[in-house]
Length: 199
Length: 199
Image (cartoon, rainbow over all chains, first blue to last red; front, side):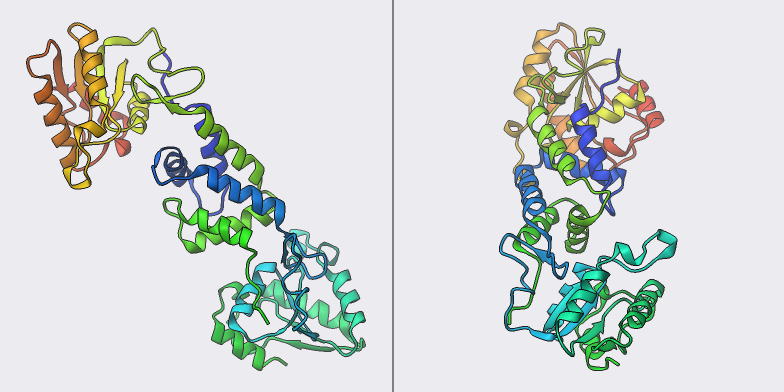
């Protein structure tokens, strides 16, 4: 007699859910059964939302922020100050800065930080397009808003060196960001102070 | 100047993920961005697994356990002892019993427990079909394997009363199940003892 177990369709779903960040085997099982059995669950809506987001959301070809079929909300905003270019690690780092209201310029998302240990070299980041953008606007101020951790420092130093001698100002976010912390967890006031005190 | 935020497609995905059990706003955001950006993420595979499970997995019309297009793995198993019918609360309660190897009969999943406070009455559970199944097999032993909590006790007492005078034996899982605990968290040995000591 075979011991009854989950149908393979359920096991496959649990297996996929286990890949998600912060979801262990037990929560994957709980989420899968909830989606299949709970009256409030709407699995069709979830998979439709997932497919729509995957299909319609891309990285902006200019700045790397989230763009949709309607374009990039930052690059297409005519009211932004094009003489200020804020360089961040990830597209998600743009959101806390926008929510703080401390900055009204343009962004450039590198797509990561330099990390020789993880084989992330300048070629893996959006550095060539950053250089191109800087060359296009005379006297642009480049604000290096990368994290204050080791990789962030290394990336900022690398960029500062590359920009030396170019016709642009280079500043860095200064006070406010806690050492070793990343942008994503900083609050609005901390970010405002960091923008004010940039050097 | 509008503050840039997630595209609505991303916000919609985060909103859907927040509905899942054990997923808060912060983890929903983390999971959504991981699915859209992480190189290891395979959102197409996840939504396909979800749709397949929703489409192909149903509750068995006889016992309420998970059934697929191939039928119910328990009801279609000719080698099982049809003179023993184990009544559990949920389809998921079948799995720990199967894994313990302590039982080789048939199951009946009620779909819940009686709970007047939550408006769950006998009509909301698979009780009519249970009575029908009991009438079909002469001298069947009905094993009430519901949880040892208040709702489980109430459900077991209700069923025991209904079965009084019918031509069937009624037993209950006895020692081993900790008071107030539910079946899902019981280990194999505990479940074996509970089956052996049924009264």
